Picture (cartoon, helix red, strand yellow):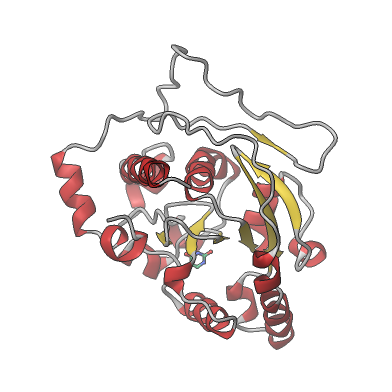
Length: 268
Ligand code: URA
């Protein structure tokens, strides 16, 4: 990958970050959140984790998985020779649902494009969906994690084909020793999964980073299911999503003050 392309991807990711910071698609979440939890880690990670939604600590700090479930995730990573800085950690929702209630379908739908853009721009080889919400969202199928955990499958999300690897959510494993054992076993297969050959990719071209459009299809399905056609040149942009120009100075300083950038996102 040329460094020009890497830079392009990083710049685009920063724009998606800036868009997410001011997102008001979900009125209730926008009104009640303290911080938008965009995700954190290595912007070129080969391994990405997708959890459910920020909790209270994440909302305070603006970072994903900083509570007890996060500590367990870090332990499990360490056991396979990885650290947080080697991977990218994101969630289905970027904002905390009040009282830690379950994400609503409309919120999942509203937030989905951010996650898909993250996947397109970070370009992981393997995505671990943590628990039911992210597994169901990414597979677009209601099959639950108990049946699917530990079974990798190929999946195309936007312009990225990945190996999806559903595993139990660490929060669930915190209180159930047998589940923790299973989670640990599933985790132990990650290095082999990461070592597999690169999957063929649908396209190398980057979309205009200011457009949050995406297309998704099952890699292994007989027919792809386009959820939303790619935006044609000149086509009107959905105004319900603030399509923002490159972040202004104020936003840049807000970004600079966030650990996400220099420390967490490895962008600069
Ligand atoms: N649980 C999640 O799913 N995500 C977090 O960021 C924290 C806990």
